[in-house]
Every structure is written in C-alpha cells, then in structure tokens.
Length: 508
Image (cartoon, rainbow, N blue to C red; front, side, top):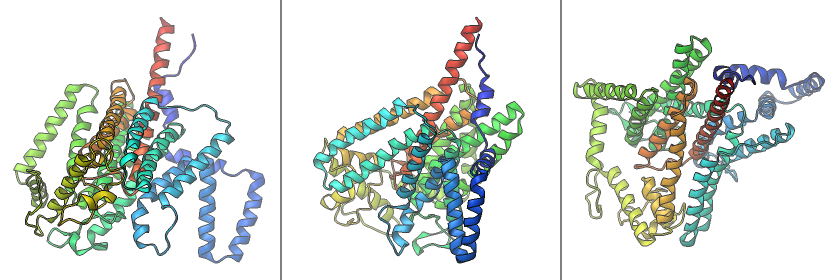
C-alpha cells in the first residue's frame, strides 16, 4: 500500500506564511560568488551617485532580484499600483504609452515565463471550466465587431477580458498563490488608507462634502467615490473569508500560525470596511450586505447553522435600524436610495434639481442603453463602444457619456446585443458552479474560508453591477487574479480528494 500524507500535512506545505517565504527569498537570492561583485558595484554606485538616485536604483535592483526568484511578487506589485491608472492619466505631466498596470503586468508575465523556462517546467494546469466560461463570453462578444462604432474601442475592451483569461491561467500555474491573494487584499488596503486620509479632510472637492460638511467622500486614486467604494466592497468579502477561515482553523486545531494570519487579515478587513463606509457609496454598501449574508449562509458546513446565522444577522440589523441605534445619516442614505430608484421610466422632461441630479443622470444612461439595445438587438453597438455610441442615443439634457451605462447588465446588452448578453450570464453561472462544487467538498477551514470569500466576491459583483461597471481603472486585473485563485483551489482540493479516495480503497 502506498503511503499518502494526511490532508492536514499537505495543507501545511501549501500554506506557507508570507514571513517564511520572505526568509527563503532573502537566503536564496544571492550566492557567494556573486555577492562580492554586487557589493563592489553597490559601493561604487553609492560613492558616485547622488543619494536619491542611488536609493531608487538600489531599491529597484533588490526588488528585481526578489521578483526573479519569486515571480508572483511581481503580481503583488502589479495589483498594488494598477489602481493608480486614473490618477496618473489626470495628474502626471508625462503620459506613458501604456498605463502603469499594463506595464507591470507585462513584467509579471515575462518573469513568470523566465522562471518556468529556468526550472524546465513543462507541466501546465488548465482550469478548463473557467477558461471555457471566459472564452465563451469573449467569443460571443466578438460578434459585436459587426456593429461596432469604433474598432479601437472594441479591441481595448476585448484585451481587458483577454487579460482576465491570461491571469486565470498564470495564477493557476503559480506555486505560491497565497501571495497573489495577499496582493489583492494589500492593494485594497493601500487604497483604503488613501481614502481614509481624504475622508478626514486630506483632499476632496466641494461636491464630495458629507455629514454637515465635516468630511469628504473617500475616493482613493479613482477620482470618484463610487468606483473606489466598488473596489473596497469587491475585495472585502475575500479578506473577511480568509480571516474567518484561518481563525476557525486556529480554534479547531489549536495552532498559532493560523491565528496570527487570521488576526492579520481581520485587521486588514477592518481598514477596508472603514474605507467602504467612508466612500458613502450606497451601491457598494448594498452589494457588501448581500455578500455578507451569502457568506454567513455558506461558511458553516451544516446548512441549518448557516440559516441560523443569516436569521441572527437580519434580526440584529433590523433591530439596530428600527431602534435608532444606527446613525441617522446612514439610515437616511439607504432609505433615500430605495425611494430614488422606484419607478424606472422615461426621464425626458423631468425637472432637474441638485437633490435628484445624480439619480436622474443614472436613469438617463439606463434609458440610453435600452435605446442602443433596441436599435441593435443582436450584436449591439460594439463591445466597449457605449461611450462612442452615446451621442447618437443620449437624452437632450444628458450629453456626458460617463464611459458606461451605470448598470453593467444594460451595458453588456447595449454593447454586445443578445448574443453577448446571454453569454455573460452563462460565464458567471459556470464560475459560481465551480465555486459551488468546492463548497460541497470536505475541505480544511482555511480553504473553505477563501472559497466562501470568493463566493461573496461574485455575489458582490452581481449586486453592484445593477448600479455600476466594476471593470474600470484596472480592477479587471484583480478579478482575473481572484478567478485564478478559484482555479488553484479547485485543483488542490480535487487532487486531495482523489488521493484520499485512493488511500481508502487501498486500505480496504
């Protein structure tokens, strides 16, 4: 009988902490014959170059060596600086041929390939269901080229989704994928810190004043609070799920390593949650509430515990609301939201005021998207062409195209027609099916927490997409990485399940 290690032992090997990985990188990045040469070059540069230039070169050189040793760290850098896209485009005196997220993504792809060649690694894992789901949507969306107003806008949008497809494959074939997960959460925390600084008065415009002109709505480097809030709400379920999984694992196994990781991710989750509230984005709030209920329902392995958790959360929330414990500003914000979007209809001729401007603007874009779909029902106006086609369909009082319809379902229908519209739902249906299959398997709590967190992410995207487009400002890169993490978990959990089944058969 062949000996097969227990699932707990294999899980311990797979889940190296970031601290232990960092020690290995430092110890293996240099070998003795090169140390003397590097030391001589470093000393010469320190003597001849100005201190700021030397510091930049030294930091870049060290980062480059570490990335060559562990390519996934290039992905962490990519995820962290990709949301700077809007800030650089609007504020930088010199425009790059590509945005900073695309440049760093190319670096990650390059070092990933170099590492695979150096290791002579020829085995690749193909997450067939996820690759098929995204590929099918891309194929169906490509038919919209027939009616595209702009070929360049069509190609730009297609490349975004092609990069999502590529990231799924790359992350699925990355050994230390836990760094990719940490990179997603870290990127949100960095934006959250900037947003909280803005919230407390660090920066903001007059139209972003809230709470009796005491605070600004947080917007990070996104330029607008709504996409910033979308980013916070999209990553928060993953951070909370990871923290909960590690925490429950520490409780059941009485081990310290999962505990400090649970505390780390819990602390990061609190920072993201604070920034989510500071964004003052009602769509982000509602999306996260829905994601939280789904996570509470599916984290327990026994369903009645999940139903009990949802019931308790609902009763507590309603009690706080009806009892007047929640801040009046928050309850008013949510109450007005339900009133504002009651009765979607023709807004032409509606009286515009400061109070209803934002709502009427959103409804006007919904109406324009419906008009596009009516005019081009099969193939739409072209993937990524909403802004280009808008002047032909926009309402008289609403000339600003805004870039999208503020409802991604209507946006996809308008841009890709019924052919692309149905494939978008098939794609997400297959992704959720993949997630559901993992939830039905017996898994360690660490894995289950991440799987439930990812299910919360997909729930959040589904809800918030009724009010906005989330694939903006390079956030599609984060979506691709999270889909790649789902692919990795699928591979590991099914391999463990198969090995455990073989072990039981051999012992019979």
